[in-house]
Image (cartoon, rainbow, N blue to C red; front, top):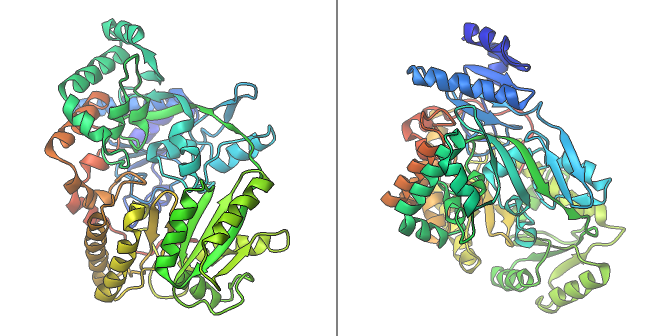
Length: 529
């Protein structure tokens, strides 16, 4: 590996490292897995990425595999940003290249973070309206395509990407955007690698029309490459949808053009606590129809656990007890917000505890997030790791899901307080497990099986709010039919015929390999939602 690193350093502007300490740093993401790479590369230009991929491809053609995993800030919770071969980190590809204020377009490199981009856009009176971890990179948001908390109102990252430049596994560059049928015919007739890619995709679409139609009927799922259902229209063909949720298995994003929005008014919030879960569900269903900016739910046990450590929000004037805390937020004009809050209040049962945001209590509303941080980082033995986050459960089965969680708590003897977004039907539970012991790791596998089955029993999806990566791939394959798996395999082969791009993720995940790489040490640092 040291000779490979030396060779690559002679040919790229960035750096390639084989230092054990550096490789150890890039061996974990936010998942429960750990894989130590052989090499870590920090490219500084698109040309660096091309050379790295071309080198890996040449090795693969000689039966020497150096699989490539692309990584942003390492926030993936499914094990998709770690690998045993070459890690390509986009942390130096973090520049805003151009802002078109009049056209509300921005061109960026994939390694820029959501927080840094919005900070720069704010100066121009614009924003990318995605409510997600500000440390997430734009490339990572596209690769994982999460349903962020505001995606029900604004559409998520999928709506805002205008076009992409990607580097194929061969090192060739392709621009992805809607192409007219005449333009596609010209590409197919060419002898360029781009033409070969379009020929393969056209053939796949023709051969798998019925399977693709079935995929289009289940849009709330990011397993495989379900974007294939949106590739062809009556007037154009666009490969861009295949990149969303692909987790770096098809190509490496090197440049992004985004649509952005004018900066909306600051959102206003209301907090309501419920001890009657049926009343909570009626309220949530009612508010969802009002098109809120955010509609968050927290098990009151999370707030109570934080209160025991001194982080009780000033908003609460009574004992918390059991139940749900609901946070409603609107980002319309102030007068319209007030009307919507008045509508919310009319459906509340008598004596329900509720608080509207005001200039005096805004900081107390902010402290609710700190309550979640306090809970996730308590001093108890074990780690609140994101084992199976961001599952999708339809609103009509939310009550069944809560009932099932109670039964699962009793059976597994673990606490499973829920937090998530009712607007996007995206939920998380963070049981505390001791990954340092064999029994603890067995408990993790048992929890994955039982929790996954609960989600499916509630007509939900493990990958409805984020793709499968490695961890979810332990359970997700059973939801894919034979024809669908073959379709996705053909798409992977069209983009990456030698299988060098994140081959252990999504369809290539191996159950035995995943179990073998469950971390045996707790992850340091602050655990975040």
